[in-house]
Image (cartoon, helix red, strand yellow):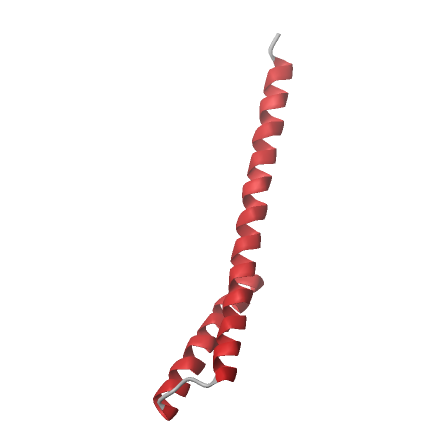
Length: 74
């Protein structure tokens, strides 16, 4: 839950900073774009790693269940 919360907060901070920079100066500074990119990389890695681990653990559980089911049948 903490990972998702920080990822969402980082994304929101990047978006807010980008909009503020654009509306205050009329252009987005290089540093703001760098920060926005870093927030997207962080959030993508959090969501992507979590999805990968969940899918692999589900595959492992299904494999174990099928092996146990095969051993119980005569």
